[in-house]
Amino acid sequence: MLVIDWIRCQSKEMKYNNTDNPPDPKDRVPRLKEIEDSKSGRFPTRTSPQWVPGLVEVELSESSRLTDEEVLDQRENRELPKRWSWELSDRLRKYHIVSWEPSFPVIHPWSRESREQAVKTYKALGRDRFLTLRFPDDADVSAIARELESLPEVVSAEPVAELAPPSATINDPLFGTGDQIIRSLAGLENQWYAARCRLPEALGRATGKDVIIADIDWGFSENHLDYAAFIEKKKNIFNNSGSISEGNSSHHGTAVLGLAGARLDGAGMVGFAPESTLWAIQAGRDEIVRHKNWAAALDFVRTEPPTTKRKVIILEIQTKTGGNVEAVKTIRKAIIDAIASNIVVCVPAGNSTGDAGLNDNNREIPFTGSVLVGATSFGETENVVCSKDGRSIVVYAPGDKDHDVTCSTDSDSYRNRFGGTSGAVAKVAGAVALMLELDPSLTTTRIREILAHSQIPVVSTLGGGSLLDCADALNQVSPA
Image (cartoon, rainbow, N blue to C red; front, side):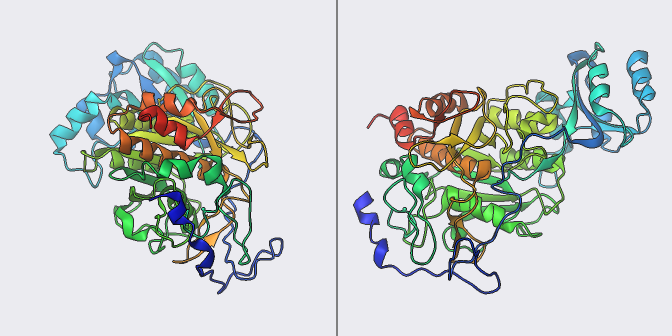
C-alpha cells in the first residue's frame, strides 16, 4: 500500500471516550480519555541502589555444578550440601544464610518435555550453575556478593536489583505526514515519531508479516480494535492462564502493543509492524514485581511453538532505580538463552540518567547480545536522550513522556502520553520485525549492526549513538 493511499484520514471521525476520566486540564482536551501511567514516561534521576532484601544470585564454576538431585529439589533448602567446600559453607554461615535454591525451575507449568528431557535441557543450557541464596533481609548483599566472588567455586555473585516498569500518521487518522507535533480538534496528537524514524518509507516494503512480537508486560486490554484480533497467544505467568488483564496496569501493555502492532486499517494509529503476529505475556501485576516471573516469561516465549517463525521479544521492565534490567543475573541468563534460540530480545535501557552498561554498584553489566534501547524526547530539530545512555545502547527511539500517542484501554480510544524507554523499545521491536520479514535468517548480531548504522544523530550526555531509521535498516537488509 502506498503512502498516498493512507491519507484519507482527514474526513474520518474517531471516537474518544470520556466516561469516567476527566480530561487533563493542561491539555484542554474536551473528548480525549487520557489514562496517566504514573510509572511510565517518567525520568527519575539516579538514586542509591535498591536490592531485593537478602537475595544474592551466584554462578558456580564448571566443576561445582548442582547435581541432578539438587536441581530437581526446587524447595528453599535450609541445609547446605555436604559436598560444598568448607570455605564456601563457612562464608555462607558467617552471613547467616537462611536458605538456597536453584535459580531456575526445571519444568514450567506449560512445559511439554518429560522430567528427564527437561533436566537434560537444563544442564545443556548451563542452568545447573546458577543458584539463589537468601540471607536475612537486613544483610549487606553487595558485601556478601563481593566476598563470595573471591572463592574458587564462584564465577560471579550479584545482589538482585529490585524491578519496576520502564517509566515511562499513514491513512490512519493519527499517523500524520511529518515529524512535528500537530494536535487535532479532538485533542490528540499525530504520530510525529513515525516520520522521525522514517517509518512511512519502510512500510512501503515490509509490515512485519509472519514475525511474532511477544510483549512481556504488566497487563493488556484484550479488546482494542487496533490490535486485539491479532493477539495469537495470551499467557499469564502468575497463574498459567490466558487472562492477561489482571490488576490495574493493563494500560501499559495496551500502549506497547499499539506502538508495536496497531493495524494499518484506518482505525486510528499505526504500529511499527502492523501485520506482525502478537503475543501478550503478563509477568507483572500492579506492585507485584518478582524477577523470576520475568525470567519465566522469557522461557515461555523461547520454548513455545511455533519454532518456524522468527520471534521478537519486548521486555517491558527496568530496575527500581531506572536502570537496565540485565543487571539481574537470572533475567540476563534467560535473555542469553532466548537469543541462543534465534530470538531477538529488545531491552529498555532504563529511564534514569547515567551509563546503561553499569549496574547500581557501578560494575559493568555482562554483555547479553540483546538490542538495548534508549529513549529521546521530542525536539523540533534535535533528538535529545532522556534515558540511560552510553556505548552499550544499540539504538535510540523517540520516547517523549508527553508526546507519545498510542492506544488507551477502551476499545476505540487513544492517548497522547506514554514515552520513556517503554515507548522506545516497542518501536524498535517493530522495526526489527520489518527487518525479519525481509530476511528471516538475520542473526541478532547482524540486526544490532544494522540498527547501529543509522545516521540520524542524537544529543547524549555520554556521547555517540543514533536514532532508529527504519528505512535505512531495510536498505541494509535488502537494498531497494
